[in-house]
Amino acid sequence: MTQLKKRKMKYDEENLIVYLCKKVQKIGNTSAKAIADHFDCSLIKFTSFENNFTHFKNSSGNPKLSNEQISELKKIVSLYIKDSYKPISELWISVLIRDFVRHSIEELQKTQLESLLINPFLVKAFGFDDHKEVVTFYFYQKITRSIVTSWGFTVEGLLLCSGAEHSDIPGFDMKVKRNNKNYQFQIKSSPNTMSIEQVRQLNTHIKNIKDKISNIPILGMTYGTKEQINSQIQSTLTGYPKSTMIGKELWDFIAGEVGYCDKLLNLIDEIMKEEPTKFSEEIEVKRQTLISDWESSFGTGKDSIDLVLQKYL
Image 1 (cartoon, rainbow, N blue to C red):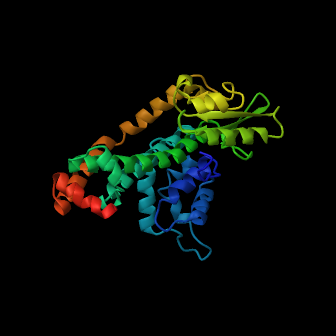
Image 2 (cartoon, helix red, strand yellow):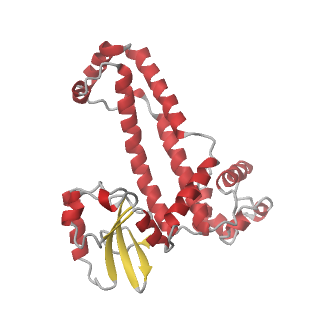
Image 3 (tube, helix red, strand yellow):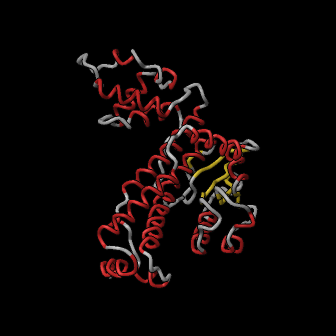
């Protein structure tokens, strides 16, 4: 996660208002912050704004937002904020999860046959002789890569909503203050995403921490178990296993609450019950569309595969 560009943002009421406002066409950061200030950075005031925009004017006395923008903003608020009296952390989590799923579906729907990067050598090595196998394999590969990248940003936000803060030490993503100490975390999604070189690089960051009494370095993995941590980490990471937290242990520590991980999963489950679209259904619809596009352009079977492979060599 340290390779991703950090978004130095507080997950508070003001920034949630700004975040939602910027979804409206032609509302930029400056206007969004002005709207948040107009409502005293209060989400409760913001979500009951039916008449308040009559007073939201520029220095010339003209409305700052058009009727179309106000209408669009109302739709966005009703879509994302179901209960503005909930804790701000839960509201942010709801927004982040909804946006992650929507973004994933949008990326899926935009996928075209031409965007599938087909490796002729793998096609031959796996013995694919059915064009549907080729389309399915490379479609899933493309979508998986896109989702993994998007999830990296989302999970960072979830951790920051849950109690972590951005770290100010190079090589670490976030920190948690506990018992007069700063626990400095480098975050990885799973227990199998680090090479030996990445572990050594983390060891260098650990070595460079000046105040090791007040700053405790931890490798945090957002899911998995201790038994699943790869051999590179186990054999090379400084201070292993005390310098790692994984799965429930990580989430519960970040939040300072036993059982928080289960609570978070239940919250996500409840959020997605309100979403009418099922991702699995969207995947299958798109897969069938891509197969149909292939057949229209190249035919079927092994002959169509050989024809397509010529484009990639």
